[in-house]
Length: 127
Image (cartoon, rainbow, N blue to C red; front, side, top):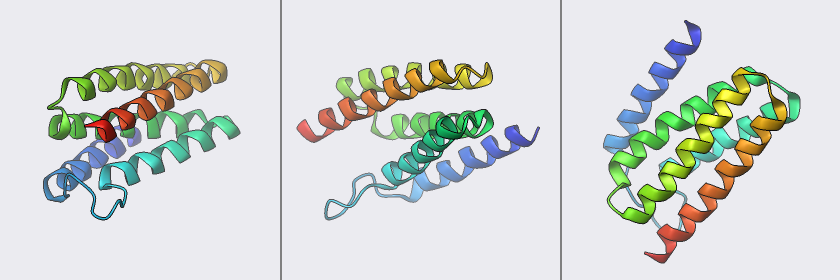
């Protein structure tokens, strides 16, 4: 129940951010999206290092919600949508493995998620 409330509150907050945040950063400053995704990623890595499966699952779920909102706003290009699918798959695997308390599987999924992030950012920079 607590997790459901946390996720719902995060999605509502992120929806608010999506409406009022600028889509592109100014002066090479990270976007609102990127700042929040980096925060979630750091917490996931902390969870992996300390074997805190709840921390991993909560932050991966919140990141998944954020990526859906961002995808709705930015998903106009085919390349972005392709990378988003890869990201979603890796994030779902991260959540699944955290739920099963499978540290190796969660670590692999986090690595795959990170690769999808890097590839997507290359795509965005090239367009």
